[in-house]
Length: 262
Image 1 (cartoon, rainbow, N blue to C red):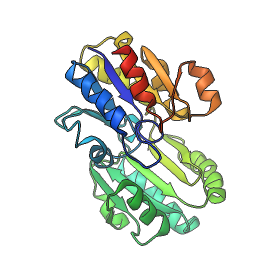
Image 2 (cartoon, rainbow, N blue to C red):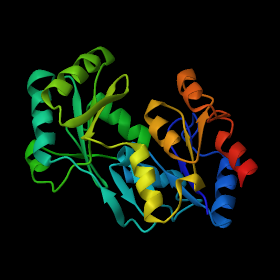
Image 3 (tube, rainbow, N blue to C red):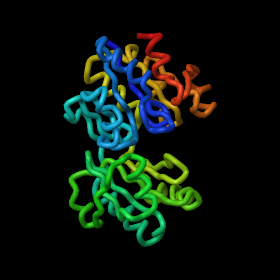
């Protein structure tokens, strides 16, 4: 059995945010042949499931860049979290010092936001086709755990904010995922760690795993697996570092490889 790991945005889904018919067919055939498919994304679980539920309904999921690992039934294999108090401290800092930046807090399958009428939050709801739940910081304090914070704002503000937050909260993993987004998670969360843990859980050697990705946050995953492939729409530097490149996300790069290998 081979485990097929895949990033989602820019990899599994095309510019229209859907999985193309050829790639769907290749994945269905792979799973029917006894292989396992696992999406790996910074998205929350509920923003991953709708993309594959109509053709691969029973699929394990690695979400929040590896902070949450679940089997096909939704049972948690691994969960690496930050404390609600850490999340609240960051959100309070934003509200006082950088009020133009909106915060979002993710816990398991739940997405909590500061203000649903905010431009950035409304935009994200549209992209992932989900509605957040508007809450207060007191509500966040009462959570059991936090998997991720997503901070949103104008790129010039986000650049400066990233450096400031790293100074104030060195114990956390803080990085821009897009020019206008900062993701905050517990330290040590990487896709490479998550896929290795997942394979070990199922007793599969890493030599029997493959992965697809398109960007820098996929590098450790692509290096950890037996065979890693970069989409042609990925940065040239990432392509050169991995060495194996397939067609872009609009032209069935995943299917191209699966049809050849499996």
